[in-house]
Length: 249
Image 1 (cartoon, helix red, strand yellow):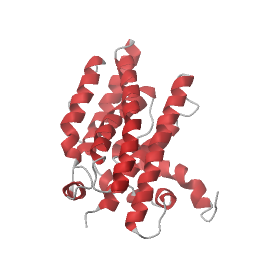
Image 2 (cartoon, one colour):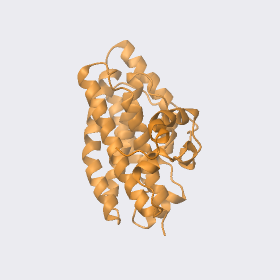
Image 3 (tube, helix red, strand yellow):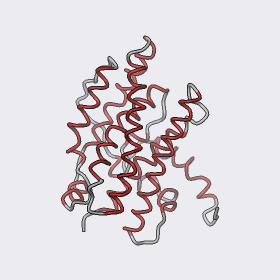
Image 4 (cartoon, rainbow, N blue to C red):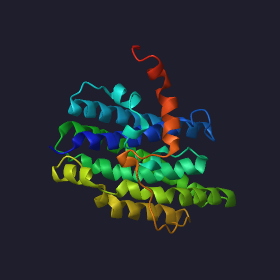
């Protein structure tokens, strides 16, 4: 059987961890409208993660719910890309990261609408609508910051320089990706690389931002090898559930 369970964890963990990072902006956005927009994108990502983790639990067949998978796994068991767990940084860092991920997510979810697993295809169809908004919203901000003032351009360029070496992991494929793709259940992320880069380059050019020259891409998250930042994030995210494991709401 194709490894659909670990594949679903990758999809879900990217969105759960990045959604939590975005939630850290609640009440701290630069303007009220953007505060609300970031909170809404965060809720979209966490909602997608919830559906994916629920499906993963059903596929696993060991009685773990979406809440159990979110709150009672340790960092080593998470399969998100390192890209998602990096600290939130300033507003430019958040926007550039969300733009880079959203372009990838849109392409990924469009492909997954054709999954042989009807439940996954349905989740993807819902996520596509959300990802289109995320791309449009973040692309507008990338251009505004990059082609704005001297300071906003510098901050956006600094964010891109810091993030770029983590983007390769989004489109790296391994046996899990290839197996689910061959089974018609998932998508090989490496097949999305050229379309992702074309759209990213288009927006960055309009934003007058320069893609940094990077010779090595960071990786490890797909195998449970994370930065120290994920442990701190999970300790905050999981504290209530772990403090009261038998509680019902």
